[in-house]
Image (tube, rainbow, N blue to C red; front, side):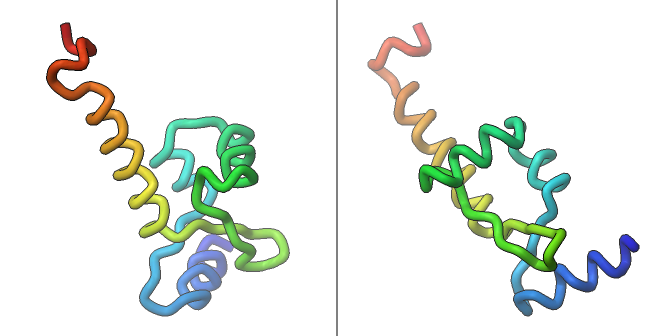
Length: 85
């Protein structure tokens, strides 16, 4: 079953890396409900159906989201802001 899932994911978008729910939760340490709510509000990359029972996320989109969160956090903790005092 695992090989079939991997093949299904790899064939969706040639050249793109698609991650599963389990991989997403390892990469982004938030609960599934929080991620779903953020997706609905447009604050997190949207999942898409690979098969009727399998969803995935574009790894590039998730990585961009992480980079944006990191940049925002670094701006909040910039020198002179008092965050590091």
